[in-house]
Image (cartoon, rainbow, N blue to C red; front, side, top):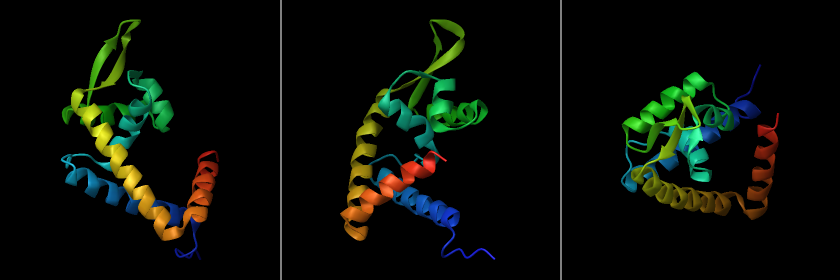
Length: 141
């Protein structure tokens, strides 16, 4: 019998869910109420390197191209990104941040920094550092 109080997978999922709930609240307070946690799969890679192909976004977010296409469409509808044909390969699309997307990047940076500081205050700096290291390990599984 799996005990949810000690099952790592369950705890990781619920911790991510709670962290994302807090982020979405902060995004709404900053004037971006339409942002969903799933937008991070599109926007975070673009914050790091703007102007990526759909396939690159999918790979960096560990999603299928089909799932990424749907997420990009939602982000595009909300005005955060724009798709354009890749001049080097007319069959591919390049996704770039819009002015609104760049503005949101600043709000997202502030919100994540504040929430990260709150987390460190609750669990302690040493545990926070250990958590970051452990989560990087989980990603490598």
